[in-house]
Length: 79
Image (cartoon, rainbow, N blue to C red; front, side):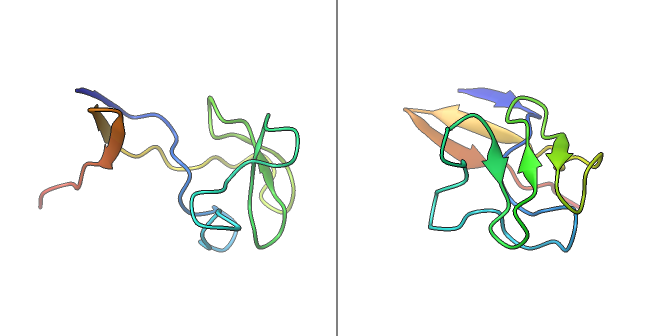
């Protein structure tokens, strides 16, 4: 598998609420941008940068993930 630090849908930088409006559903109607389910903030999928909404100019926090066998796994940091 591969590991990366790409932005992965998780929590909005505005209030820390989860992005998905349905389990595993993060994109707005056109499928081009990620959208926050709480306040409608819009994020670029490739960078996690917020282009519209209450957290405009902020970014999603990159998470370490690993892809293996067609599935993506979140890698937890060890203390």
